[in-house]
Amino acid sequence: MKPQFSKIYPEAGTDEAGRGCLAGPVTAAAVILPKHFKNKYLTDSKMLSKKRRDELRIIIEQEALSFAVIHTCPEEIDAINILNASILSMHRAIKNLQITPEFIAVDGNRFKPLETIPHECIVKGDGKYLNIAAASILAKTYRDELMEQLDAEYPEYHWRKNKGYPTRAHRDAIVKYGPTPHHRKSFRLIPEQLSLDL
Image (cartoon, rainbow, N blue to C red; front, top):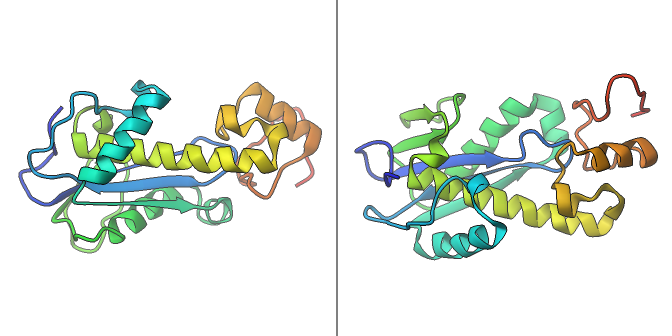
């Protein structure tokens, strides 16, 4: 894994978590790492155990020159759609960095220009560049933590386990109990053959 995509410094890596969920926010992070940052365990958050992600989160937060994490709520997702909400979250995270980046490395294939800062979209970038991998870990760990907190309020939806993703248990709970304020009303919450009053 390379530290960053471009030869421009400082470069921010950015990624989001929770895009395919039925409930909870979409969460984005932006990270600027030191120029010669190295960590042999740092990679795409989906490839790591929870324990390893939690360990890496501490290292990233201690060693990053700047980082920011932003949650965008279901109401906003419903109002502007999930793609726009994901990009908006990344924009907000980048704007919250204490250092303004000269370049943005974006995980995925969709982004909108942020002011005049050049950017590049990199498919599977979180498995190629350390700054995007660091952003993926922060986005996932912060979002998972929030969904575990919400699980205490709504245990019947099993968010501690499914984190808001469309598992069978999650969909069954929506059919049985109806949607919560944390569900995305613009998403198909249950299969088409079942009806749900929203």
